[in-house]
Length: 362
Image 1 (cartoon, rainbow, N blue to C red):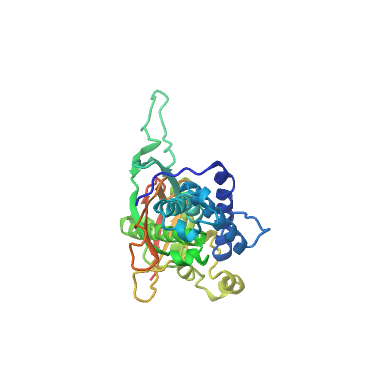
Image 2: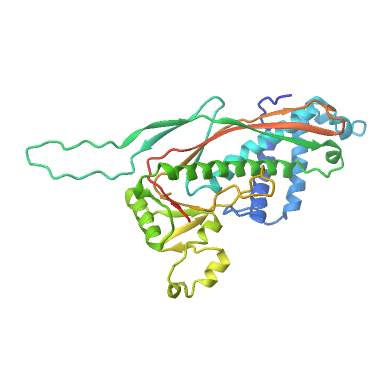
């Protein structure tokens, strides 16, 4: 069954959505990192229990079964109702839609913009020139010199469908051992991980399209500083930063042993230098290639990217605002498991007028 558009009740908008956002922020703070503030008066486990309770109440409301929560009709009977199954996945789908763009925007703030569009629409971007205007010497009797454009055109990104198919154990839900909040959180993390790969692959492929002045085939301090300076200068003086995986950024070190003195404590505590030759370094979280046989890294550690985030972001990400869930009918499987596919549409692309550079580590 496919989900229809679901509208949360006023009570849910007031209670569940803020609690869900707070839970997501708290979860990311404990397991990953976030700069957002969350409620510290409750621990994460308590918040998960409260969110699950609120989800359960919203599912019953959406399914029109709120009045059946009595002694004669228990949850075991409710989960055999097709409307209850539809409502469960519809609510979870909505919760994923609510926070995923914000999570992605925070994780890739240094080099990506996030936009959400309606179903069937696309994102449109104006490509502004990052060049400064050329100033020419002109005679007193001549009105104009060479005309220069403020922008170079527009490009669009149309979201493409992506699907995650999972199984939910109905028996574990009945026993209270299956956390719907944790399930939705894992969906969000999976989408964020895939978008990280989309961005990394697009940036890596851009090495071959860079002109000679905007790429380096090996690391030296001079090459690093030259590329960072050129990217900043080509973007109108906007300061450049260097982005790579932690393993890649480990190689960004002075080559002179004398200059390495005193860097050990900072290097060991962070894993790389936060600043090198006046250029900030920013780590891109590594991801796993889940299709590999032995948990291979998905993002190459051999590339460092130079961008000017203060000017125009390098990457654009466009989400469709409403996902789709298709769930099997009750008892389709031989056991008490429920198959469901979450369909989410997004598209990433390198769309910018800003210049960027790529260094390939040897």
